[in-house]
Image 1: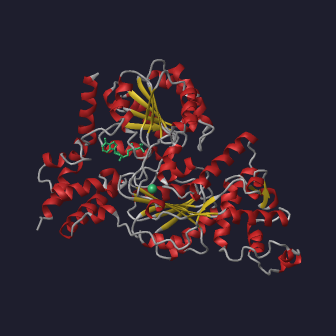
Image 2: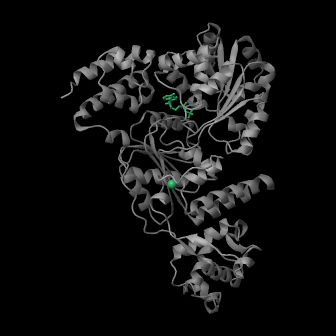
Image 3: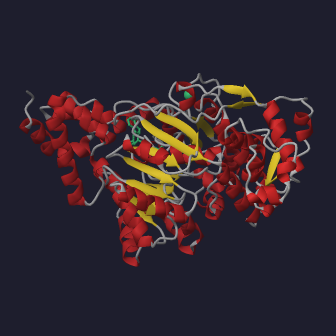
Length: 604
Ligand code: ADP
Ligand code: ZN
């Protein structure tokens, strides 16, 4: 046992160049080294991969890694090669020749980790192949894909249970960053894990700053945000392909290195964009949710949602792509009533059964409730993942500038009577216009200018009315009927509000929020003027080394590692090896280069 622990720590230091395990890594490794099964839940960037990579190096034979991220298998194999670890992959996008090369490498024993796409499990040859290898461990990455209730269900993942029969007694570890209780149970059952040790890490990502605001017309919210983040990498999510294209185009016009990404674009082009992004120092990908699963680029500095995501889970997963390196990062979401209606329409039109639709609707409501909430953003996010008891975080919009709340009961009553008197036939825009006393011909033609509710809300800003409508939708008082173009319909619970038997407190939609404080790119801000030359020289050398091998610069060293080199100015191989992120293999490959750069930029 403890010999195992010692060996694991030695491997961490020698191969990966890290001094200590992060929380739960040692526990997960110990569990599989003893032959047991494990389910590991850690946020994106928590360090899950190491939990099977270290055992893979310590155990005899091969570790099988099931992963749906076909497009990233090459990157994973490249990154391991940098560490001096033999790895290969099998998936349906390879040529026969590439597959033959992997099979050959497996036979000659030069592969310690074999990445396998789940669809390979239904190929008849796979069973005999796996049984002919000495498989010591099976790792199932992105394990939430087995769950129908998760946001990323893959039918192929349902097949993974067969591995128990094919490889009896081989320990298995399932890994995921998304797991509510339901998903967790699904994983254990569908994968047929035997008395797994369930290890749940904290889901907090303290370095990510959250901001959520209502959409205002025009682009100023986005451009204002980006103006403070020039020369950084980020992802901007939109709901539709059209909007993806238009936004990317617009940003390019403003001088940003922005590219579109959605499932309608040519596959080659998508692959190229993804590769460029992985290697980039300053690039924005504007994308639908087709982009990003498994993007483990450490230095994504921001994630923007220009439309509402589908659920809290999806939002957390998407924003989790920012700041994997632990440096400060931002997540900004802009949302509007339009999004809610759109998403509800999409749900209504889908062919899924009613139960599923109801679950989706509930998830959307939970997310909207979160958007409109006046409390710390992080607390309810963590609570959603059963991570309760956190203090207000101090690193979100609501903590920094607590929104005021107001007793909105009377206004809600006005709104509801207006909906009632106009026959529950109109969308929010029309109802609000009537309340505010607009003289539009449509209102006059309908005779709605003579209703008692006409103009009774003229003193209240249209944005406040909109936010109130959202709130009533979220709380289930109102329903925006997608089959009637979002016509607002009242639910039974409205009676309570109308009779004053319940009250409604709402956040003031803060239209005049202070501009977010400028947060300088964190690594940059820690470089003193006299260190700048060395920093630039190291980065330039890293880029050159990466280009020569056709890999991303961060696969050679992370920024954090270069920063430590700048601070420590190592003079010998032994000193260089002390730096976090420098292991034996990288020392052998890059030690001379780095030391010579350090020497040539003598400190002054
Ligand atoms: P996940 O798969 O959980 O999203 P990764 O396995 O990609 O996360 O790890 C995220 C980053 O953290 C990687 O760059 C990895 O090298 C680094 N990392 C993992 N474990 C440690 C550790 N014990 N010490 C320092 N860095 C680590
Ligand atoms: Zn907070």
